[in-house]
Amino acid sequence: MALSQTDHRDMLAGFESAGYVCTGAPGMQTNPLQIRWHVDGRVLRYRLWAFDITHGGGGPTVRSADEFRIQITNGPTTTTDFDTDGAVDLLVGYSRNRKAIVAYDRRWLEKWTQKKEATGFGGSPSVQVKSEDIQLSRPEGHHNDATTADDPVLQGSGVGPPHRELQ
Image (cartoon, rainbow, N blue to C red; front, side, top):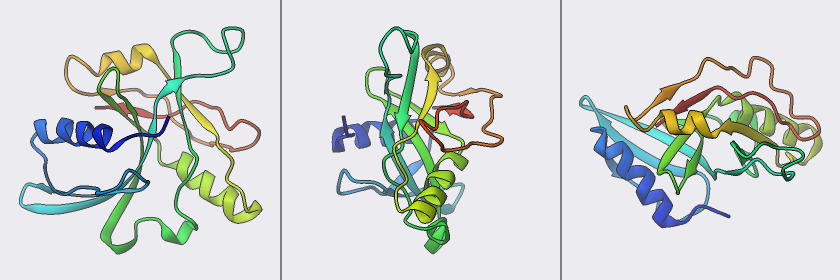
């Protein structure tokens, strides 16, 4: 299921409650969400490639009940499109049930774009996250996991360990 404008507003509300003042929010529900935040007297610009966090797929014989994912279905058209016009591109997932944001290692999005440039199709690779990691963000508003995507390869399903920072 695609994220709605309500989901986007809920995501932004979480950032605003942490003290970030959003001065430019998306008017549509399509990726990327173009956002400007005032932080410590500076304006920071981001493009959030935001995807719905859903169950890990494949049924109970393939994925455990506590495994969730995002599926990258779109991103920058070319690698030269990253971080243009002073904005930083970020890859995030949003769990509307938990009101939690998962920030993934951006290299997953970069690899998707590289594959699309090379083959004409980026596919829809999934990047997993455990329910426990999403829940660990609740008490303090974030959780850092040491798992990294040192060499993410988007072949086949593209499934592999993400680097996660949860908000």
